Length: 351
Ligand SMILES: Nc1nc2c(ncn2[C@@H]2O[C@H](COP(=O)(O)OP(=O)(O)OP(=O)(O)O)[C@@H](O)[C@H]2O)c(=O)[nH]1
Ligand SMILES: [Mg+2]
Image (cartoon, rainbow, N blue to C red; front, side, top):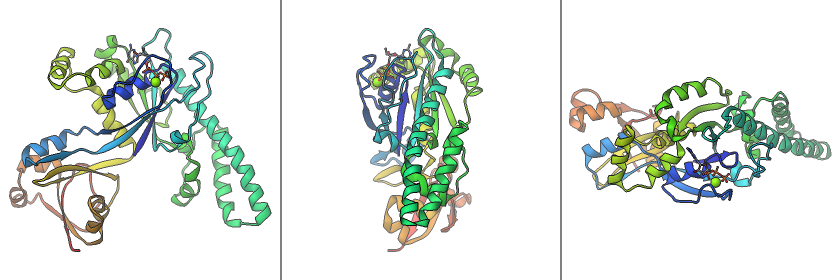
């Protein structure tokens, strides 16, 4: 569950990284230093459920961010080479940080540069591997690899038309064949428009404006002022609410950004509530009840009998299991049930 933060030099990658992690890595030093952090995914729903269940412990979902070096740092004007480290290739999704705050900023141009670089990087991987694979097939006659070659050639064709690999409709089998190549242009993207302090009141209109111009491989966009968000993250709890009040906002914008990142990874949360712990569990969207049970404990999946499920909203309304039952809001679900984001679940199992 890892996201890579990439962008042109000095676009605010480390600033955003600090804002999400609460760390205090140096910014503005052109160091292109790489950082990583595992962070909690803020979830108001879990906080509210915990107020009702009053558990000893509250455990949030977690995701990992990598503040990647990304570019070789030739400066914003020249087309710089994307430095593709092996660890960047391991990321499941990418956050593209775009400077809108500095004089002469052109976030749409920068976004294009980033996407072109990713396509270029993937093309190089393809050229090498298509050659190699063709030779292997010729020499060894291993026809089972011919399918792989075919899919690679389709990827190459797409890139030559300047289309990202994400746009290809691949079957699950085809997807598996090329997964190991970890193509960048196949990863879901979240574009972050990093704005100046003065533009904070215009976040909504800017979101609309930027959303209208992005290419389809950008699944989602966020508009944040990284600098202010970083300041907020470094305040003590008491000062934080004061500061937010002065800004006229309820919660830091970066919280929404983290939730967007979570959802970009194709993940949802369900909750379990008990006296020892209230917890958000992470599963891929579309998972069945036994799979969800398996996220809690492998025994739960093996011995799965049923799931007793209430939606978050119903749980907040009725507050206890007996009350939920009495209003027919506690649903008994079997092994084919597809878990929904926000479900509160009690698993019944037999081991
Ligand atoms: N006004 C304004 N300045 C910002 C914002 N975000 C970052 N900056 C400034 O931009 C400069 C670069 O920020 P960094 O976070 O170091 O950028 P970076 O992308 O990590 O830079 P490299 O790692 O060197 O490529 C710093 O001087 C930041 O203070 C923002 O939202 N608004
Ligand atoms: Mg940096």
